[in-house]
Structures are given as C-alpha cells and as structure tokens.
Amino acid sequence: MDWLWALALGYFLGSIPFGLVLAMAAGKGDIRQIGSGNIGATNVLRTGSKWLAAVTLLLDLGKGYFAVWLVWQFFPLAVPVAAFGAVVGHCFPVWLRFKGGKGVATNAGVSFGLAWPIGLTYAVVWLGVLALTRISSLAGMSSVVAAAVAAAVLGYDQFIPVLGGIAVLVIWLHRANLKRLTQGTEPRVGGKK
Image (cartoon, rainbow, N blue to C red; front, side):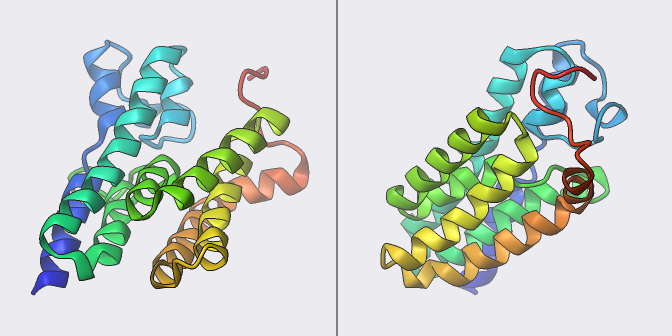
C-alpha cells in the first residue's frame, strides 16, 4: 500500500500543468497550440516570455522535488516509486488527456530530492550542454543519462533502476528531437525560428 500511495502522490503532484496554467493566466493562450505542443518550460519560452519560462522551469522542478521530499516523510522505502510517478505525471497528465511535457525539469527536481549530489550532477550537465550547444533537447537528454550514471558512480545504487527507467522514458519522448539532431535541423535556444 505504501508503494501505491507513493505512486499516486508522485503522479498527482507531477501532473500539475504549471506551464499551461501560467501561460493562460499571463494571456499567452494555450501553449499546446504552439511549438511542440508540450507544457514544459522550453515550449513556454516560445511564447516570447523568458520570465514565464523561468517560473515554469522552477515550478516543474519544484513539484518533482516536493513529491520525493513528501514521500520521504511518510514512506521512505517507496521514494523511487514517487520519483517515477512524478515524472510520469508530468509527461502523461490525466487532466490533459495524457499529453504533457518531456520530464526534463521535473526529473531535475526528482534528482535533487533523491540525493543532492545526483541533482548537482544533473544541473551541471544540463547547464553545461545547454551553454555549449544552445540545444535544449540535447541538454535534457544528456542530464537524465548523467543522473543515472551519477547514481551508480556515487554509490546511490538504490536509485539506479528508477533513474535509468526515467532516462529511457525521457529519451523516448525526445525521439522526434533525436531525428532532427541527426538531420542538423534541431532548433537552438535563442536561434531563428
């Protein structure tokens, strides 16, 4: 039962569509109708509002962290399940007919919640790859893999399965981005549309 509660709590918190709610509240319309159609910070940035994208990023990160932190308090052995639930909730929110974001920011929060060294590795890789390439999708995919590797290298073996599973999910959700990367047509942050 602890695992079921943890999964449900993680999913519920992860499924809060901050990007969509904030964009609509700011008068930017339904972000599902622009760009990739996703509800994450990268697509919110396509509205032209950097501050709105930044707030979305922080809230999506926060809900991943909070889901893990909350479950630590009540069901510590079920924390990995809550972590997975939070990312799945963001990617497949029931409220939006299971079409959400790609889980990168939420998984950043999850990583910090599981262990700060994993979260720090995630952030350094994410920001580093983004600074070098200005390609959001590449930074996101690199960071989810880095989190799983960090768990193995830093001795957090109990988190390897969940972070590995999340990495596979996030990369699968980026399959269109991967195709554009191989074709050299993936857009860059701040680049021409």
